[in-house]
Image (cartoon, one colour):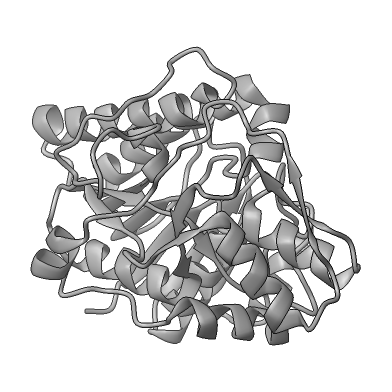
Length: 314
């Protein structure tokens, strides 16, 4: 199934640029909407020569228009790294609330399928492991990380309400940790931070003991999952992530290995409300979407080491 014209909010961000490129490769016309608060127009410079690509600067927390036919809205716009959402907490909440509202309004006006990108952070520091979509989470609603967690939880509630009240063809995906080429070195998330430190010969900073676990999905796999969700009429939420669970310390050691760095590891204070374990149950995505990740962590890290010589900016 080829979407004739897709709107990607946050399309100049890390995930958004990969999504826009893949939609173009599949033959869609793509409208990239971004306000460049955490990205840059330069991130999509390689797409600008494509006649099927259109770049629109707009803040989705205000009403925005995309004239013409639209048959898919992918709502990715929201600060996603700790550096960004801790720097702009209210802006993050506005993106989750008003940004999602306006993306849903666009989909409702155009009768488009809309996929709202939520996050594994809605599970908080989970008491259920691995996390299934039926789990309601263990989230601190007023902690420093809550601005991102609750923004996404509210976005999910909006999407579900639009489907019930207006019949909008909504879908919700809960994205677990995603990595790949093009992440900003100063992104603040674990993988780009480890790469930046390893390539600079600095110690890799591991919060706490490093025994906390994550599941890391390579961006190409994640994009396949997003577009599989878009092609379905599944309302979700649906987990998208890699069920290969690894410790943070193991990730640090693997990054040192693939970069050939002489760096060591330096343990620093744990982060507030940092989840102890994080791993998706992807049975629903496998059954409904026919999707599961294909790129092992070792291969993804090697690819990132080779291809991340020119990171995104912003």
